[in-house]
Length: 339
View 1 (cartoon, rainbow, N blue to C red):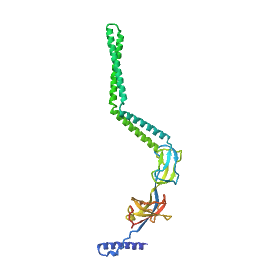
View 2: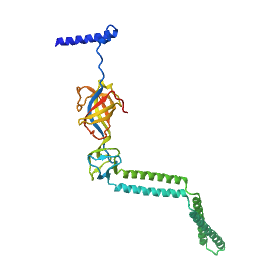
View 3: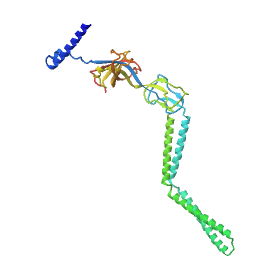
């Protein structure tokens, strides 16, 4: 064993010395061993990953219906589940009625006084003035009679008090008529407009809450788990289903550091399954951080070697790539990018 070690050490020393002599010009470069050629195809191993979503209601309530079972396909806009909505529907109707009342009050203020109201105020003012004129005549007559002692002083005092009351009513009615002619204040109109805006916001909230009693899908996928049943009481954001998205399918594979320099994002790739399926794809992500090879990945190298994670996105037209499926990824280095 010692002789073999000496021979290997001597051979290594000769190669290093030959390389130094070749670089200095003492020996021809043809004496150096030729560098290893890069591989034409990089073969990697990993598993298929599908992104999942866990849709849930934005509200707390009792589930009224569950529309899907495990394995059902989901398209954007499809109804998934509903909550009991009697309370939310009543709240929406109340908000709509309150908005209608606020809009009516604003319209009344913006329209101003009606001509009939102004004419009625003028007629009332004329009536009060006529009563005041008659009261003035009565007071004048009673004053003459009281001076000659033909009328009691109390009757004169009552007539004078009635005249003052009528004059006060006339002043108040004049102010009322002036307000009717000028119309409502701009501040009152602004306050009414703000009230309408507040009621509109309340209606929007009530309508959104009523809409949120219907859980609708927003992506394409397959139901992998149904987590609740009709009659269950759920809290906001409680997952109702687990849906595996079909629009984003990728193979999670790992590459050794020596091969990392041959790869770049966008390179074409092929994903091979154990059943013989072949899917076209591309390198979509190369991790900037090294890690140890996961134990679930079978490679030809030692598991303790440092590797970098790659995501190779696939065109899964037939839906044959499923969550967790082991696959082999081949990346031809001569092919160009697909994106």
